[in-house]
Image (tube, rainbow, N blue to C red):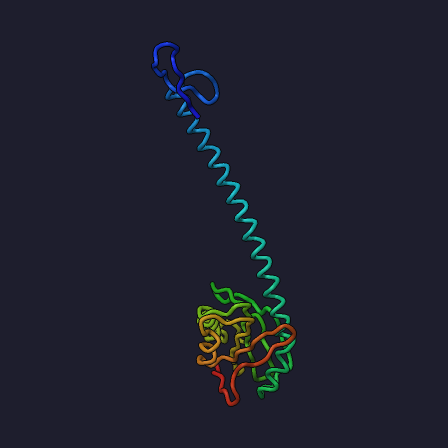
Length: 198
């Protein structure tokens, strides 16, 4: 911070003094102060960016672990749920993934027997965009995984919470909907629901 000083007996003010000494401020000194301040701002920005990255990494880790917990909860109920719905699935697999041409794909859970396959997308919070993306994936599944070509493929979304009517959107698109709770999971579709076959 600069300050002006009185010249004794004259009532006149001289050039402002530097906060770092009793010498008048010059353009060069002001320029150096600006450069130093700019350097400090850049260092602060860098520290903020590092902190933001750490927070994002922790958030991603939390969401990933939470998502896996929900997947495990759903996976443990899948065979019961679909047998009650009239589909006699016997096996489940988690994280079915691969590459077809230039496209990578991943399915959270598949439940199957020799002729039926239910593909389940698990979300902690289901949103309309998730339903649209999943439907696009389901349309390609028999191309991506030729071993599924002769099976009756049905889709299902499972979630803890559904936003903006995404659960109704999924049901209207012919998908099963599963609600995960604290210790189990259950089918939301009404009796007589006819799922879409892909």
